[in-house]
Image (cartoon, rainbow, N blue to C red; front, side, top):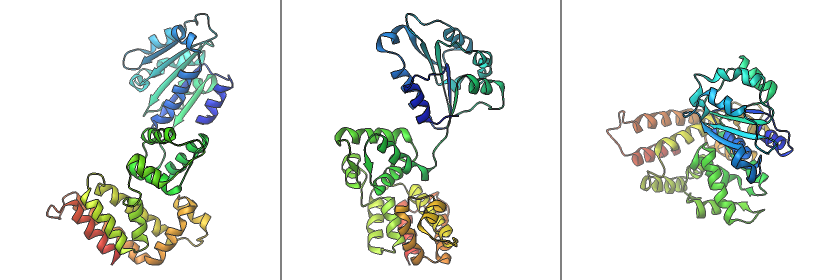
Length: 334
């Protein structure tokens, strides 16, 4: 099975397959392939008669197959795209016979989001033999910053490591949202530009100084003044800086720090690989490890669990989230 760049490159080179079954948990990659086919495979003149977009909730497999078996009108091929195809999950196996012998002049695309078909069954085997079966896997958070860098590099832009981490912290793993913000920045920045934390702050509204990334760094450095500045800002803007997100990020940081302490080889590349971080940030873990021995790291993880319980209203006498955060950070730093 090919990856997304290989599939799009093959289509660009006119190596087009009669069936594309795009499935899995990450809708962004599925949409990227389907949108490319929809936008580029046929000329504007041919699209009117030879391109059809169907929706899984509105059609049956039999109707899709009937459309796929039509011949194109005055064109080399026709395109049939089935969006929200996961709505057909109960009857999708009926596609098996068509997948075994697809119409060569039709490009049939299934956008089967958040679900997969069984690769051991005949349907999947037929698609692999005669078309393209693409599995769109959700990116783990530690992979998203690298994806942002690659996406921008492909578009002739660069991004500062801190800036990419700010995007991940603010937008999470929603690649669709991240891509929209990237596209906004590309409108205002010339090709070849580097996206910096200052650009992110000015144009997206994420503070470059008061965010979870900077809080994590301040705590790692045991910089009491800076950490207090950030948590006071958070307490005053709690909706924009929800406590569960802060706890989750800090818990991930101290869990990684625990792994760091256990490494026999603390070479930069080894640390980056094991902790799944950009080598650029290894020095922050080296500093934090000096400030937090293994016993203190374990204590901080316990404090984070306690704060998480309190944030859910257990044993905290309904303390505001801002007060829970202040208490947590004070105990971690002292």
